Amino acid sequence: MPDAVRPRHVAIIADGNRRWARERGLPVLAGHIQGIEAIRPIVRRARDAGVETLSVYTFSTENWARPDDEVAGLFGLIDGAVRQYTDELIEEGVRVRVIGRLHEAPADVQRSIRAAEDRTSGGARITLNICFNYSGRAEIVDAARALVAARADPNAIDEARFAEHLYTSGQQDVDLVIRTGGDQRTSNFLLWQAAYAELVFCPKFWPDFDAADFDAALEDYARRDRRFGG
Image (cartoon, rainbow, N blue to C red; front, side, top):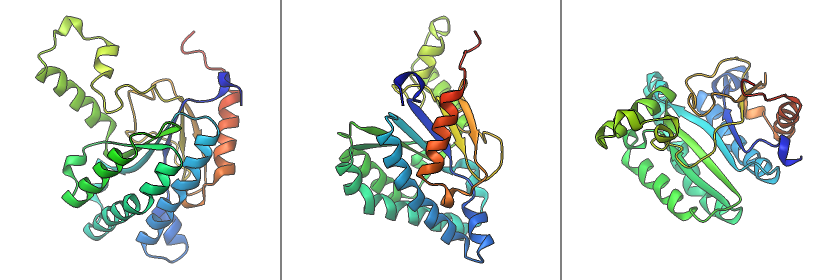
């Protein structure tokens, strides 16, 4: 794909794990297990397609409202996946960054994720943002708090200065948002970064989303005329 039509930053709202499980008469956690497995081939495909940053929505701040056993199971799965796949990510040149309020997660999960960030810090082929305990509005609030704490001059704050305090500081804005599961909304995801992103909605549940579906989304993106208000 020519550089002019290749998205540099792709963000995915990986929706539909629970519905995937229920349609098959399986426990909800089985859907989340398949959802975690579905991330791996998409990371590889994004890397091979020349995408520089891939952001995946794995756990939102709103997800705390789910049943306690489901939340605990999700934390266990994320912790286990990070431990299991870090070596593979290193080999494939993937740098892992976690964006969100990680400090609110259980201590063992925090340790595993921070270790993965440190060990993959040399990855140069693609950055994988794991959006964990994430909320777009919370991110904007946290950035504003950081500016206040830094005693920033209000007259010196512009969009560039504000963006320096977002979780994604130093990264490019989102070019393409893909949402699986059939719903057509952004669900409080990367609200600042995706201000001019193209949106692609896929009816498949996330565990069924594959590399061919990802390619189709990139092809759809390439056909768009991005004018940025011009």
